[in-house]
Amino acid sequence: MAREYLDETQAYVNEHERLKVAWELLSYANMLYSRVYVFKNYGAFAQSFDANPPSSEYWEGLSYEKLIDDIKICTAFENYNKSVLLSKGVVIHLIDTRKNRVLAKRQKSTPVLISDFLKSNKFIQKDRFSGLYLEGFQNFNTISFSRTLTDSYQEFIDLDSRFLGYLKNLNEKRNRLHYLKNYHGAYRVQTLLDNIAFAKSYGTELLQSEIVKVERLLRKFD
Image (cartoon, rainbow, N blue to C red; front, side):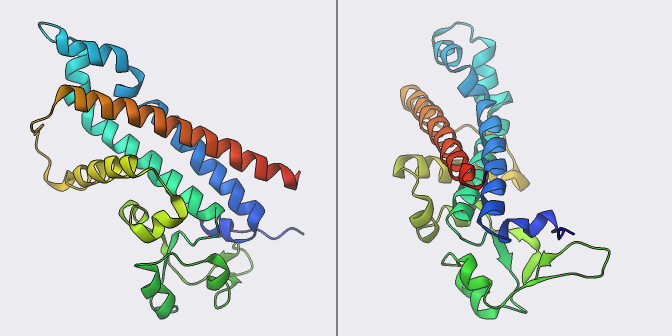
């Protein structure tokens, strides 16, 4: 009878399972990214700055959909980053300090390889009715988006420096949700539009090319 693994840690069973999880993360990220308002309506949004009075796209892009767009972009690339880390054999779940003090401390500043983690942690079963899960994690929570943007994690992910700065800026704004104010700040229209156009093009191409890459790797298991 085939062994049943819990979804939370099934990605650590073998390379095939890791790639399947990576593909699911990428597919969701690609879907979410394609629904960003200013990406879908870029042309009308760009023209709205010349309209008097401003059109609906102006208010949607700068105010009503702005926060939602930021969340969609950050969530999409949090999934992308974790997908890439998984496909390259890096642990994406938070390591429990009680069982893995050294590895947990290392993970805060440096990616931990799955191969290293498996040397001291194994799949276990709470009882004969439950699925197998990998011990040694902290409630199956994953590392933060902010951590995936740090230099050591980017050595594995390797995002374009301009796009990385764009994501860090959005993530900083997203992290202020506990004290949200309708503050736009000063901006130069052309710079804003250039950044949006770049993010739309670069991010979409990156997501889709990574999906193709993972699908190609999965075919070797057919």
